Amino acid sequence: MDKTSVVDEMRDSAAEKTPSPSYAFVDYCAVETPGPRGLVIFGASGDLTARKLMPSLYRLFAKGLLPNAFFVLGTSRSEMDDAGFRASMADAVRDAAPGVFEEAQWSRFAERLHYTAMRYEDDADFRKGLRERLQELERKFDTQGNRIFYLAVPPQVFSPVIENLGASGLSREERGCSHLVVEKPFGRDLESARELNRRIHRHFRENQIFRIDHYLAKETVQNLLMFRFANTIFEPLWNQRYVDHVQITAAETLGIGSRAGYYEQAGVLRDMFQNHMLQLLCLTAMEPPSAFIADRVRDEKAKVLRSLRRPDPASLEGTLALGQYGRGRIDGAAAAAYREEPGVAPDSLTPTYAAMTLFIDNWRWNGVPFYLRSGKGLASRRTEIAVHFKSVPFSMFPDSVEGPIASNVLVLGIQPGEGMSLTFQTKQPGSRICLNPVEMSFSYPKGVSLDAYEWVLLDCMLGDHMLFMREDSIELAWSILTPVLEAVSGGRGPRLSVYPAGSEGPAEAGRLFGASGRRWRPL
Ligand code: BG6
Image (cartoon, rainbow, N blue to C red; front, side, top):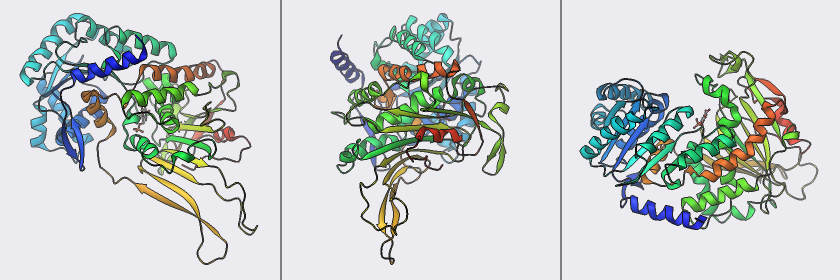
């Protein structure tokens, strides 16, 4: 089947399976509410369910965004009954959403929560236990056979769950939709991601699959497309004629906490670059899609990934810097080194910081460096995209104006401070010729709208793929990172520098700018 017919098939099938929309109002905006749905969570006794999924579902319920015909069926290996599950979820939501939790409302929500213990490797548990419980709940809540299977389990469990969903017939769309939601990490290199895609596709079609990158659901990341393509004044400047370089930063103050088991295997390149960082780059650099629909947007993002110049694994010194946090101080308190965190090997070489230069070989971006950096245990928590414009071609001002005229910088703040700002030069009042850089800014009021997981859950119930990763993008992103990861693990990457926790990261990251005179924006 060619690409167009695949896309048509996807659209037709989505239209068939999705009942007609209804809407609720959140912050004066109409938000579409899904039709009847049953949500099965694999990994219901785990951390992700307690910290993100259940609080988000409860908030959606409180905002009137869940359908009336809705239930959750939690599953995991732990033995528990419905009452035990409801009690542990109440504690989790009280902790994660203290201002929103309200006893009477919780009781109404909790009536929809159910639990069944199962073994993921056992096909009988799927064919009998899960299937029968699901059918019973579908009758009770009248969800018309519309099912969502959410994999909130460690990646080594993805395969048995997917195989057994297929073998038990639960992946088939008979009466309603059957959607599969897959959390990251999606593979650990190109080959394992391809294998996972092949495995999923044995039982699910692409339009049934929702691969999560929660960064895409953040308010300001979604706003990037509106900002670029609903205004005329920025787009003419958005290219190599006017842009000097772009800096994309995702800095965190926190260390790895209790996630050593996962992080020691992943490191920052797999954890943040393969997904979030490359997605931010795609949204910044992509061409205008022909329509604001999921596949048109995802086509344009895939084109950016195809145009990215592959970093040469033989000479990474000039394009990649790696670091690991040592002991230091964060927010005035002593912070342990990465190698001292529980579960981390005392001689671990896992990078917790990376900075990388990438080039996009196309007409729009030829020669413009995109500098990406992300790390843990840094001086501040900040995620932003900063577009640095070129300097004025010639300064007509006398030598008495100090130094070169600073160029304009447009900053798209993703978190904390969600909003944007533009710096430009003005005349300092009073003195005759004295330039004064000023900032024009817009910020979103705190607490409006939905958080990233609320959007993700809502959209997979609505069957909207806009915020999810398509098969081709996942594999393209891995095709860029895999040779780099192999060079690093083979000892052919740059030296791993230790930086003090609470600092700006390793000084080596400055090496990426060479003699250009550019510098990282302070954290
Ligand atoms: C996750 C990474 O995907 O994103 C974490 O696995 C990271 O290591 C987190 O801390 C950052 O997300 P956010 O939304 O807190 O910026």
